[in-house]
Image (tube, rainbow, N blue to C red; front, side, top):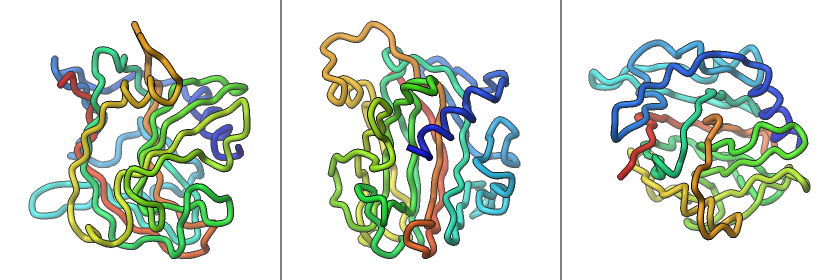
Length: 221
C-alpha cells in the first residue's frame, strides 16, 4: 500500500508536459539515447545514483543498481491502450535479489520491473506490473502484497530466475488484453495509461539487484 500510494501521490504532484513522441504506429516512452530526461522523477532524491544512462557498443541504455533500496523512477504519459495496445521493451538482469518473491511483503523485491499506472486517484490507485522475478515462475499472476483494497496492483511475471541472466530479452505484451482479463472487461472503448514506472529494488531482502532497460514504447501492432 505504501508503495502504491506514494507512486500515485508523486504522479499527481508532478505537473509536466508529455514529451513522449507519437510516431504514428508507435508511442515512444524512452529510448535512453540522451542523459536521463527530467521527465523521469524519482521516489527519493538520490534516484540518479541508482538509475543511470550507460553506453554499450555505441548504444545508450538505462542501468539500475539497487543496494537495499526501494527507489523507483516514474514518467508521466498519456496513452490510450485501445489505440496502442502493445507495450514493448527490452531488458537484461545481472543480479537477482536473493529469494525475491513479489507475492510476499518480506521478500517483495525484483531485479527488474515495469509498471503501467491506470488510475491517478489517491484513494483508488491501480496499476499492472511486469516483472523479472527471482523465484516466481514465468507467466505467474499475482498481486502486490502492499496493495490493499481498494488499491490494486496486478503482477505478471515475464521472466524468472537466472536462465536468461546477462542476456538481453525482448518483451512484447498486449496490455489491453491484460487489462480486460484482470478487470473482467469485455469491451473497452478507451483506457488511458497515465505513467510508466521502472523499479529495480532490493530493500525487503536486504540484498542487491542489478538490471538494464532499453527501448520502451507502445505500438498499434
